[in-house]
Image (cartoon, rainbow, N blue to C red; front, side):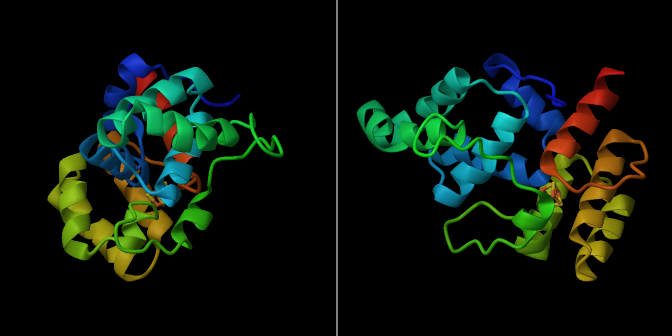
Length: 189
Ligand code: SF4
């Protein structure tokens, strides 16, 4: 695959340094609430598959969180199937691909959902706070907000990428897994 592999032991650090905001948000909510609704499990789960998290590690990762909320037994009964399904191990055995920005931006999260694109779906106040936590400085932050106001969500994400990596990204961001692989390439070079 084009994507670097990640292991469970450094997933928190990698999430911090190389996940786009949509996935950071889901990751943080999962760590905080020990639960994500279906849309979030799909969006984050397929992204993690795309960055090379192996099925066994994915099961361990989700189980560690969900067990704290619903118990290990219920996880095995109700949620493990969905994860194996994402990896093409259940049902029609389709090898599902991670969602593109376009698909994520056009999703319609309801109350209690954490999937979607934060540039499109967060309030401006929440977006500003989240960007601040990512280390986007004031000047760049205003540029990002400006793009959001004009509904150029992927451009806003591209500007964020440029700000946090201190580099230019001429190709633009069109896929969360591309954000990740470009970030890894820059940080490891
Ligand atoms: Fe995620 Fe794409 Fe939105 Fe960036 S533009 S936060 S990668 S969906």
